[in-house]
Image (cartoon, rainbow, N blue to C red; front, side, top):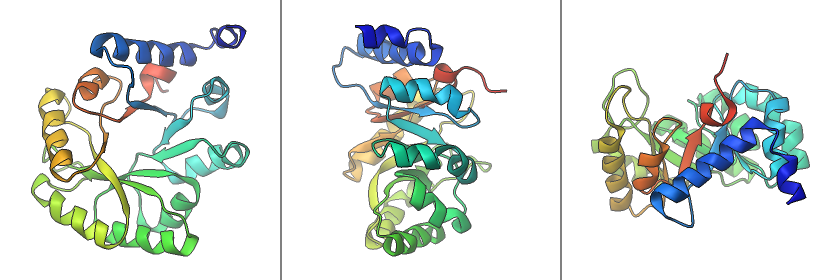
Length: 224
């Protein structure tokens, strides 16, 4: 109890607890999806209370920002899982594999090949999510729905550790429709992990078999 109350002054910890309780209460489930605290743009000063509380999954968008923030902490705490949720350029793959445990944004053959190559060089098997352009939006990255199976087979032939699919639904739309679609795609491929849901739609994502939720502002507050 003393341990618990020690962290009650930290809003980010309270927010995380509230999100977990909301999911449990609304869905009436014991095991909730893993929450990735999306810490991009936030300093380690803001992140540290969550680490001290025992939270182990954090998300960053940019490789260089993550290296600057997390290199020392990852050496101190090897049980922290760092997730790259932003677009990854091939020239940053080596650095990304060295630091991150998961990549949620694999969406081209070129990138998949580079990850496979550097993973072998570094002798590190990184966990991969295939990003799907679920709304067929021109401005968004991701594999088209009709090409997901072929791309999955391509990645498996490279011996990549594909955990599941990831998507970001179109803005100003009903995310539930897209979550249902990607959940079905995921099951058709026989994949067990699903990276969907953010601050605005994590309940709907949890109802559609999400195993990872990428939540930033609802934990840390608004970004400057």
